[in-house]
Length: 175
Image (cartoon, rainbow, N blue to C red):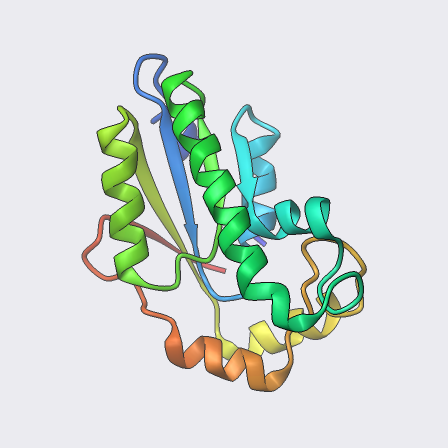
């Protein structure tokens, strides 16, 4: 994964006076967390809904009932959004490890980032559906915050509902 991508492209855009916020975009299994963790190792603060839910409520379907997931996602995103604003004001470089599956949410965050004095970079990780299925089979065996179980039915609904960024200033990485 990301063997041919030069992370220096992103690192060059960092600026002390204007914090860079990298917005990850892609379907479950695309590699958003792996990519984000590489940025985190190089000084970015990583914000993850999955990890926030895990830390607060435990594992989906085990520590809390499935019907609570949407409520917990909204709660986690609200907290992380406030964290994002504070981090921008503190001139921190940030990577948002969300799926950003719809354009309206991407546009909302871009505007928010700019309003609070940051600049954004949208990274779209493009992966073939069969590669996603293979990755998710492996990932579904793990037991951690970033291994939210995804069934074929859920993946199909994600693929159908995902709005591919086009003409949004995105950087596309085929992964």
